[in-house]
Amino acid sequence: MRERGHIWPVVSVAAGAFFVLVVVPIIMKRERGSRMATVDAQVSIGDNGSAAPSSSKVPTYRWPDSEVPRTADRLRDVTGVAIAAAAYVVEASLNGRTPPDAGEVISGITRRELIPKEWLTNQAGVLRTPHATVHLRYSPRNLSIELVSVPDERADGPAILIRLPDSENITVGTRYFESTQLDGIVYSSPFAPIAEIIASGWQPRLYKQIQIADSVRSQLEEWARAANRK
Image (cartoon, rainbow, N blue to C red; front, side, top):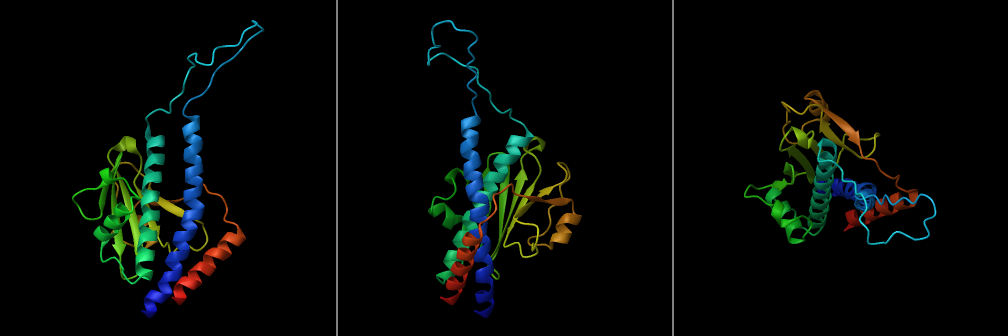
């Protein structure tokens, strides 16, 4: 119980900060992306005395189906799963119902409709998202979550790894990891040291994020302290 009391604030702050730093920017970016999917290219040259009808067809632009947008979609999906899983594990543990394995974590976030049911597979802790297979690794001993997004093909981009809490990360900000190559990707054992992951051909990447305000950070820290006192 003493060990669990020490890990709760760490995981709680990580999950809360991850939500503020990642979810909000991703949602905002996704909304902007939906508006940018088409471009209104109406152009008027000269004064012809009449306005173009609003129902006229206009040229549209669609992002090409290529590695970059597929990687962005996969990062969004695996980040969403990471946030949902971390929040579920923390809440369940605080209520004295620590999930025993990855299968229970997947079942829990599915019951809450935090992930699409069509992502479920017959394998415990494994999800099938568009263009990738996501493996959820979970350690009930220290309430750690690790997700690996394995691309279906080269055009789907590099492999992605997210770990919560990222206890070895003390200075660089909210990050995830990408494989540096598309072929012959080496996947490390669950919760391997970061140095080992990097040595096997992965590099850390920072989320493009907004900065968390001091007031919000204080609220998160106070919430973690209050949760640890329960």
